[in-house]
Length: 412
Image (tube, rainbow, N blue to C red; front, side, top):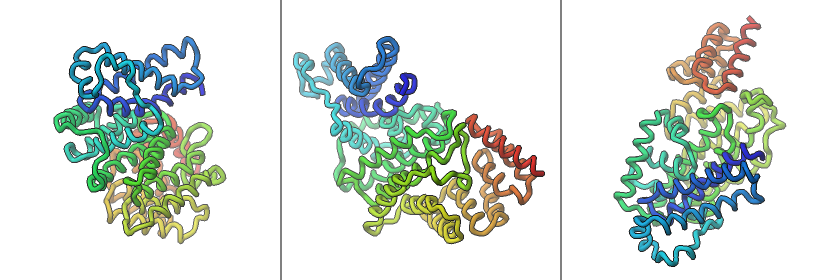
């Protein structure tokens, strides 16, 4: 991997790890310092590696620099030394011996503890999710704004208030009691779910899929499954859901990076290993009597890994969408249901249901209507696709829509 590709990749995978370990060491009161040290580490990496070339082990290089920068800060900053060092139970003379543990085990523990510390009742759920995406997943403010369909100013204010509340409540970065874990787990899973969706349906970057975000979400969910306190059915269901979706990564885009519709995908590109892994976690999710929205969505995703295009498949998917909407209504789930409805009962019925949603301003809404109207009323199909084109943000989406419009136009 070239340097210009490696540093952004490492920033996504390692920035949050370094931040979590240092934040656990410093506490919520000084979380910005942890973020600044992590940022400075990557700035130095960019400057040094462009001159000297890549080190043999880039991640280990980052960890070493981060450790040294943290120790230097502790030694040189008088205010920090006076107020924080006593809490850390180290004297100034001992700081150079301080072992900042960036081992895999401590990174895992720190990230999970940080996530559960953030996802607690002192701050609103949307702030919990936003702060987790920022600190634990390395999201930029624009990415978080896109995930919440909001703007950067609103998100900045929300995160600042959340950090202030956590400091005010003197929240400890540690695992809560088992009973408290159950209360916070839903927000933790929502955070991971949003992270995966931002990668799978990337809006903030000029690309169709951001695999690094999806893989980070899968990694975080996996961490929850290997901890006995968090290895719950809903966790396994979410991990199964993401494995099923990720199994079709290579088939979702063509060599030009343009999106390929599900019915046009080359099934030979589907990842059988990931499908089997998804089945494994879905079976584990079935242990116990819990049925979460993640169970239902994982079932829908599993049916999408079945090659055969049969009436049974689409009727099963349609019934699962009906159950999902009863558990938790979502406009996007309702929109996706209309695609299954078209496959099961025909396009005319699906068009009626889709138009009831009135998701104006949503690119996917007009794209789906364009698909539903194709060969039913091609004039309307083109009109809806042009609306989608006006709302599209990525060049790849625009190219796909333009080709679809041209294909329908030539058939008129």
